[in-house]
Length: 244
Image 1: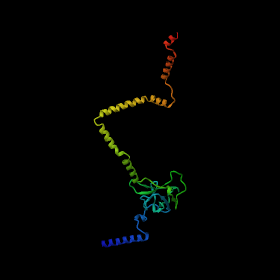
Image 2: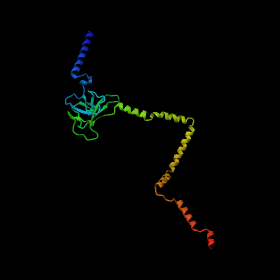
Image 3: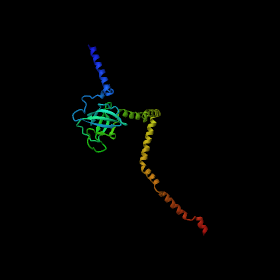
């Protein structure tokens, strides 16, 4: 009895697959069939389209969300030139401007992909999104995916030099092993040296400013020049005696 039921069920399944292949030109999985309970099927629902540069793992029946609330689902994905064209069916109470944006996002780190609709952030809202509206490619995009985030993090950790921190710390540990007292003394001397530089910073700044300005003789140089001129203006004693 059970064997007969299994045979009938298997035969029905085969006939269903054959019918789907003949009528639909191929079986594309359960996502190609309308699912009950999805948003966007109620009264007043309308259909819009969005041009996307890439669809990642978006599938038919993927959720469409506005402010983290599911308001519709994806009904069709097709290629249009060098980009993708998504057809979405939304609830009738969705209120968005005609220049809204469409981005691919995820609900969590390992969550499923969905389409996030939102008003534009770089321009004022214009018009209203209605049945037959098309979101252009310039307003389509995607949030960073989990794979992209992990790839960027891997690049920082592996190629950014962080992997060499352990080698550097081990080299310092080997260099100063048994020389802790010398290291403390060096740190103390550096502390005194920096304090001395801090006390003399006014003189250092004045010296550097004098190098940038026009040259002026120092007061010491002027006093020395005056004394030399005074002495040289008087004739030697031997000259005065010979003159007489």
